[in-house]
Structure formats: structure tokens, C-alpha cells
Length: 101
Image 1 (cartoon, one colour):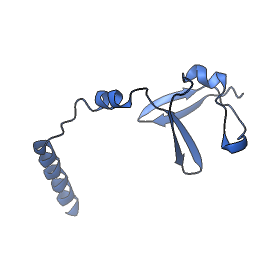
Image 2 (cartoon, helix red, strand yellow):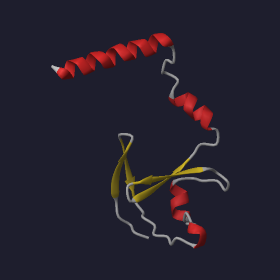
Image 3 (tube, helix red, strand yellow):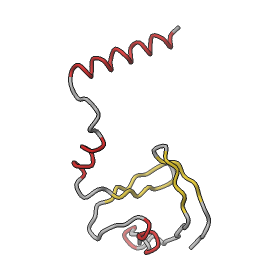
Image 4 (cartoon, one colour):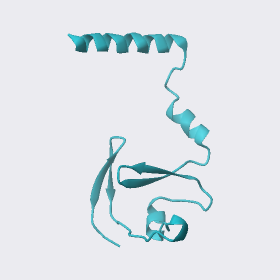
């Protein structure tokens, strides 16, 4: 295990990574998430994760147990109605016209 500090930027938040694990891709392309990583990012057996190709990298993102509740929490201040959509459309059109000049 490496013990070097890395800084990464995700959603405009800075995270410090104190350990980097190297694992081997096993048969059927399986990888093991090591204990030291699980201590930092708690996972449960059977928990769903998103596996996202990102250029020549792979991001493994744990998903919440109840994603609909997490989504509701994240979008609680967003209006989803015709008036809000019209207001957003007018704003975007005005911005596009402003850039043309």
C-alpha cells in the first residue's frame, strides 16, 4: 500500500487520499476492494455500486441504499414546474443572445 497524499477534485470539493491500493483483476474481471479502502469508504456486502468508464480510468461509486431518497434530498430546492422551466428557458435564450454580440 502506498502512503502518499493525493488531492483530487470531485464536485468542487477537495479530498485527501492517504492510501492507494493496487489490486489484481481476477477471473471474470473481478477486483477486490481491500479492507483499508473499505475503512475509508464503508460498503456493505450486496450494496450496489456504479462502475463508470472515465477516459482510461474506472470510477467505482457506491450507490445509496435508497437512491430515490438521496435524489429527493439533493433536489429539494429545485422547482419542477412549467413556470420554472419557462423562466430558465428565457434566461438561457438571453445568455445566448448576449454571447452573440
